Length: 177
Image (cartoon, rainbow, N blue to C red; front, side):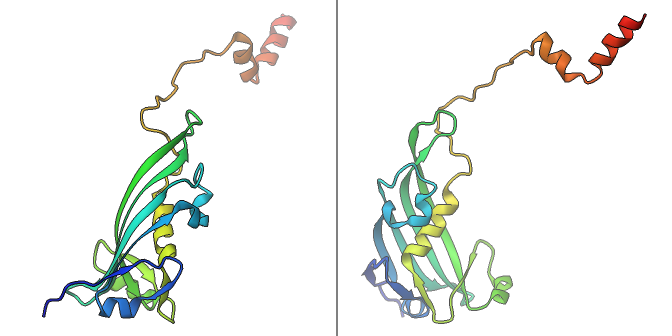
């Protein structure tokens, strides 16, 4: 029997019972201000903006329970070349295989990321979204279009002599002749 997937408003700070959400094939949609994501905020230039997300709970053809997370955001970052603020557009599409035990990870199909669900089955929406956004932040943010500063800076004669540890010995040898 085919049924429409019900749509529920997002309750980002509330915990969801993932096993009930999977069995009901629920969909959660919502928006979160970036200021509501404290772990992500440490990587951002500021917390202006928001993330729009959907969570689709279901099981696949192999009866593996999953949540498919879709998220769109513009993350304000500090360019490490120009030291200017820029917004990095992020679009996330991730399928998380729900597991009760770490040993279940081996049974996940290719393309699934493991998500270990606590014993009580409750997971906070904000944590799922924040975790994926943290992974999307580049290690070294660089604004698109900034040019790398590559130039040859020749060493002065004094610097070249200082680099050679035997230069002083060569000078002493020349004096002894």
